[in-house]
Image (cartoon, rainbow, N blue to C red; front, side):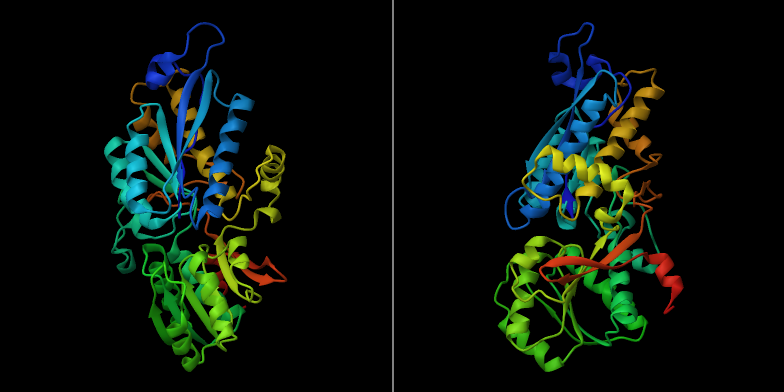
Length: 410
C-alpha cells in the first residue's frame, strides 16, 4: 500500500555517472559519490502511522548501508516525499523524483491506488519502483489475472508484499477453517485495495462453503455507519469482513458493537495498525491479516529491531517496517550488482541496468528470503492472522498460503 524510495548500494561509483549532485562533490582520494533514493509515503494524514514507519525503516537501511560501506565510494541520501495517500500527489512526487538523475530507485507507495498513478511515470523514466505494501494483483499481472490471463504490466515495478489474491484468499480460508465462521457480511471502501481484498475473500470463503449474507460499499471518508450497522444486524452474520484501511474500520467496528452486532470485524493489512485499536474502544476480538510473519518472531529481524530502537525513532515501524527495509535493500543489492558488472563504476545507463538487476535480486532479508517472480511479485507468500487481545494485536496463525491451501482442514 505505500510509496517509498530508498538508497542503493554498490561497488565504487564514478562521480560523472551520478548526475548533478554527484558532480558537485569534489573529486580526489576519499571523496564519495552521492546517490539518492526517493521515498514517497503518507507522512501526514490519517495513514501517517504507517507512512512514518515506512520512512524511518527506509532511512535505517540507507544509514546502515552508508555506515557499513556497502557500496565503496558511495554515500546514499534518502529524499522522502509525502503523498498524503492521494493518487495525484503520488504521481507528482514520482515525476519529481524521476526528474532527478541521481535517483536510481523509488520505494513505494503504500496505497495500491497511488501506485496506479505512479507506475507509468516510473516506466517512462526507466526507474525502478518497489513497494513494501501494495497488494492489488492488477498492478503486476493485469486486470485479467482472475481469468489466469496474467501479463506483466510494468517492467520497472516490483513489491515485497504479497498480493490480495493471496491475502484475501488466506483471509477467507482462515475465517472458514480456523475461526469456524459460516456466514459473513462483506463491506469494502470502493478503493483499489479494499475492493480487491474483499472480492478475493468472498471468492475463497464461498468456495469452501461459507455464505455471504450481505454486502455493502462505503466511502473511505465515511465515519458514520448507522445505516450499515442496521443492515448488518438484520443479516445476523458470524463475522463482518471489511476491505479497507484502519481510519474507517476502527469507527465501523465500534459502531457495529454499539449497535448490537457483537461478532468480530475482520480485515487485511490496511487494518493492522496500533492506531486501529486507538480508534476503537471495542476492538477486542477483531481480526486482521498482514503480509509475512511478525518481525518480532523472526530471527532474521532481530538486528533490524535492535537497530530501529537504537536509532531512537519516536514512531513505530508498524506493519511495513521489515518489508520496507527489504525493499530498500533490494535496490541496494541491484545497484551493487550493476557496479560490480561494470568494473566498479556506475554505468551511464544505470537506471536501466538497476531495473534488469532487480529481476535477479536474491538475499535473506528482515522478512525472510527476498526475490521476485516474472511479474515482479515477491516469492514470499507468508501471511499472518492477528487478533486484538487486551489492547494489542496478537498473532494467531501464520502460513504460506499455498501450503495452507494444500493442507485443507488438517
